[in-house]
Amino acid sequence: MDATDDLRTIGVLGGMSSESTITYYRQIDQGINDALGGHAAGEVLIRSVNFGEIERFIRTEQWDTAGDYLAQAARGLEAGGADFVVMATNTMHRVAPAIERAISIPFVHIVDVTADAIRAAGIETVGLLGTQPTMEASFYRDRLAEHGIDVVVPEPTDREAVDTIIFEELTDGIVRDESRERYLDVIDDMVAAGADGIVLGCTEIELLIEQADRPNVPLFDTTALHVERAIAHGLGERAFDDE
Image (cartoon, rainbow, N blue to C red):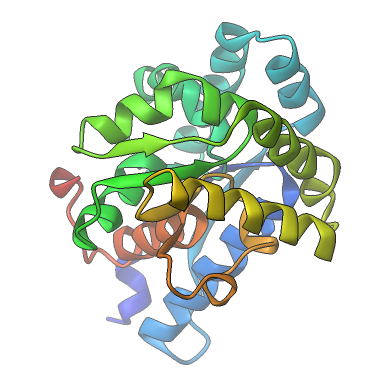
């Protein structure tokens, strides 16, 4: 029997934005191939939703409607044969409970995966970069707090700038040096405020910032960490009851 016969089907709930979904797909396939060699690639089922709708739900704070919309999409992944689901976004994990209630297969939560890496690094306080809902609402901080991790967020004007760069640049694949420098200034301020590491809490931020930009401050790339866990589950290397 070929090793690829034992692959689990990874359900990716994406489209928020397509830039992050592309990264998930490419890195999952690469990770499976690195593990198995040859022409091996992941068993991946992608449900890409309309980002225009998601952006409107965020802007108008229609979180219940967003939860229903994404829960229906997740049910489609389960019906299509996915063995588990990862959602290729941080912000919309605000409605993760609605998705988890809607499906009977495991949902791999991006915050839990990130928290595992933070704890493994021996860090108890992190700075959080992301969209304004991610930085300002309690869902992300509360989930990290369940793992014993405290959170520092940027000042209000910095949160607005970080959010604007995400929606007006990164979600369209636009990467500007000026925006990178703005993010690095915000990171430096959070470190000065007590953060021992920084969570790149938006799946597009990895387009702009990498560890080499701040080699002395651990950066937790949520996209890379989430993909790594998806690959481990796809290969059957990690049991879901270990989550």
